[in-house]
Image 1 (cartoon, rainbow, N blue to C red):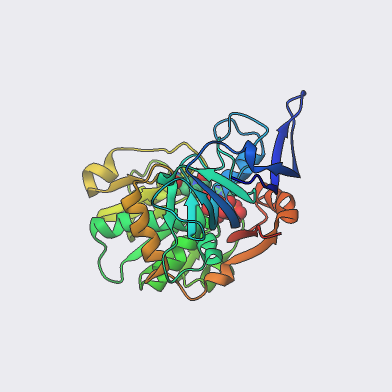
Image 2 (image 1 turned 90 degrees about the vertical axis):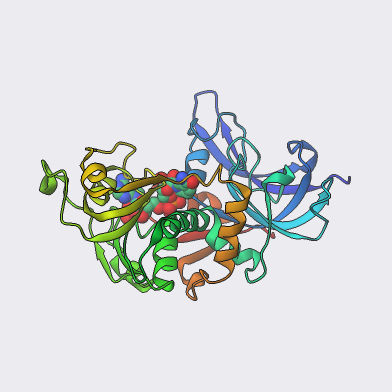
Length: 332
Ligand SMILES: NC(=O)c1ccc[n+]([C@@H]2O[C@H](COP(=O)([O-])OP(=O)(O)OC[C@H]3O[C@@H](n4cnc5c(N)ncnc54)[C@H](OP(=O)(O)O)[C@@H]3O)[C@@H](O)[C@H]2O)c1
């Protein structure tokens, strides 16, 4: 196959253990082995990409490295019978952008088993507005739906301004649920309400519930993206037999827990891991995102940048100065 040169974000580690990022020209011949070569047309920025670009060894072990856990593009070459050149595809999670060269390069080469055919009803660009964040929100909501959500149920979403949180608020309110969101550090009430949330509250002060294993039961279910005290609050305030999904740790990886939500209210806590989610569930989630869960204000939660603006955009995520989704146009 013909070798191509392409532009890519590359994160390097210096001898004094500092991490620097730059846009470099690379060659497809140095990509990892894989069944399918994809020309990436859109990518997106996630919390995990910021961690990878910052030298977080829990995400990326070896540098130099190209982050990007999300990629949408067109098959350039394939040794798999399942994919043909010219097909539009979405690749998210698995090892993409972690220890496999990711979607912030104009080409990726991956196993066929990582690839989802783009569903009708969604453009490549729109698929990246959802990206891993939207997929994770969809997997969380699917889990709650399968648990059994009463019609018009009241749902708590923590971290409503973030990628996963804003996607969850949007999908749920579009689907007719009554959403209350919890802000992150900043007050983003106006933005979160513009996505249909009925109410937005600040992170509850843990001192107010200290010594109270249960709080007033208020929500039928909750989508947690923050961990820490917001997850503790959700566990103590979801109604009997309700469920909570836990996908993130933006506030903290630690939770203060007693057995009471489980033994006095029958609460179920579901873990969400989009990275290892089975392909069948993944395809089901993408079909919903392309269909009944595709909310009309999808564009309004996103900002588009080019590859040349990726580094400052990652800095914004690091400083907590972004909201919603940042998509990256990888065409130039
Ligand atoms: N399990 C999975 O499969 C999976 C998939 C995707 C993401 N995640 C995880 O889900 C979480 C959210 O990801 P994302 O992509 O939505 O991130 P994001 O777009 O950067 O959003 C982060 C959210 O967390 C809030 N936040 C940040 N630091 C905080 C703090 N110290 N205390 C309270 N709130 C804080 C932010 O609000 P402010 O800016 O107002 O603080 C924002 O609402 C991350 O932990 C990520 O690793 C997990």
